[in-house]
Image (cartoon, rainbow, N blue to C red):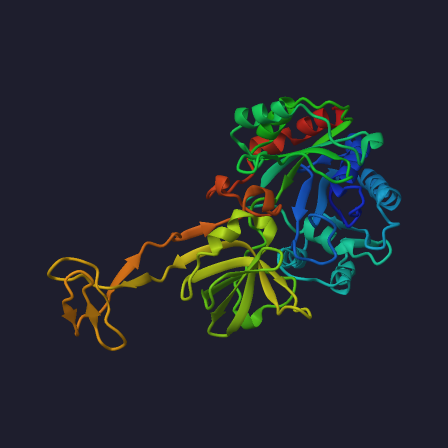
Length: 447
């Protein structure tokens, strides 16, 4: 009888290099002939505000089916690969593995949902090892078991996207990625179901990472076919030995599911807050934009930082009394600042009227009146007629903002940020894709 095994692992890379998806691809190559895949490998981005993360706080889950002896073989491969290929020499890298046999407990599903927005301790994650079908393995501190279980518990039943990743030869790690840039522009135009390939506003190619990790390109889209086609149209100028497609929660806003009052906020969570603007936005040193908001429970600062570019300019036009919804991560209080919402996106719900006052006109000659002195009314500069009782005219000025949602430019968006180009899209699996998974994976493994 064949059993199901869910494999999760996380915290295998570091800021200096390596990549959890690269490790996953090496594992898939090793075990592919032994078992059947029930899904594409899942790349699950967790709460992006966690202070311990490396780059994108991404964990990987593999969901496979096979004979007991083959699944045990796969476990051994995973353990050896994670142990030998993780960046364990980095003090901040603490890998973790989780194995869940057959049905994923509802408690792990709940853990996964919480891991999208909250901070979870290693001790809390370790408690799942008491379940009869769950095994967790820690290296060093083993913080990676939090993400490993979080990836396993996220079945991507609702919205999801795909990412095609290609990988470099080890000799090229840390060097500039060589590619025919024009081919990327062409691929972008030819594949409307891919997105975030190029930030045309800032003329920046987005599919090429800039770090020392093994990834050469990362192409994101709505379907497997779209991301594979885009990759086929790109002309790399170096050898790429591996590629893989991941099903992922990237660009779904999955970390923004929980609404908070201001008095409920705590450091490092991802939060949605409805509030009123209470002071006019202003720039501080470093060209960061700061303003305050409040609700019935309290008051807090909000920040749009310099890398968000034009987003700051848009938010600088907010006025006291505007009603907004802020989506962001909570930065803890430090010596120089209070606890702050780092704004990731912002929705304007209601705008106050912006008015100005102008002197009235002379009824005789239609000239603009001037003040005749404090509490003395107005005097016409042309015909000298005096007006003691007239009041200034109140004029409404059109606001430069409109009701709706505002996002930073593409170059400043996070992995989980749902871009406007995705609109209200909400993907779901199809039977056709499920049937073709192993065929597509075989082609990717063979490269």
